[in-house]
Each structure stands twice: as C-alpha cells, then as structure tokens.
Length: 138
Image 1 (tube, rainbow, N blue to C red):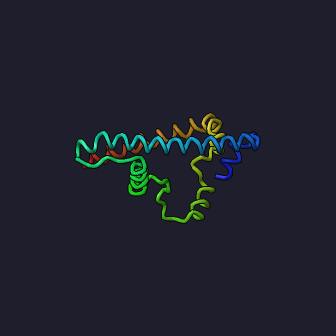
Image 2: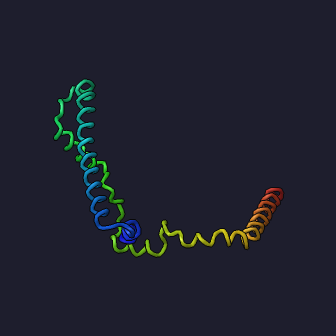
Image 3: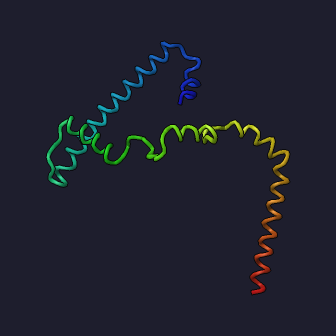
C-alpha cells in the first residue's frame, strides 16, 4: 500500500495532498449523512405500511445502517485466516497487480508463440486420435 501512495502522490505538492485528504473526509461524511437520510426515508415509507413497524428518526436509521454493516459484513476485512504479515510476504512474490512480466509477452508471442501453439494443436489432435482409436476397440 505504501508503494501505491508513493506512486499516486509522487508529483503532488503537500498542499494538494492536504486538499485531497480534506475533500475525501468531506465526501465520506456527506455520504454517511446521505445514507442515514435515505435509510430513514425508505424505512418510514415502507416498513410501517407493510409490516406495521414504528417510524425511525435520523439517528436510529444511522444506527440501523451501522448494525447491518456489522452483521452482514461490509467492513472490508477480506475474511482471511492468515495474519497480515504472512499475506504481505506472499503478495510480494506473486502479485496480481504485478504487470512487469507482461512487458515481454508480445515479443515472446512473435518469436516463439506460433511454434508452441502448433505443438499444442498437434498434441491435442494426437490425443483425440488416441481417444477415438480406444473407443473403436472397445
């Protein structure tokens, strides 16, 4: 994660970074307030009419949202049973976001890909012929 932030903020001034952080915090706060009002509005519109449940105020709606996030599991922990130290070491060796090896892909395919593909097709054809010969003998 450190490399990600180093890369993303490499050419930014400290003032821009502080602005981004303040904007992010404001956006998160605004979304939290909006979620509270949306949940309160939906609950008060549907639940009393359908199930006969009481109306909610804003703070009850926010509490309900937090409770559901905890119970349903929207906290983003990933649910890994391994410790974070072990998983960090494994990710360094074979990362899904490591695209450095793909820079050689086009060159490999142009130089050796056709030959390997022809070998693969020949192998598949010979396996299909062997399978058809075995099925005829049975």
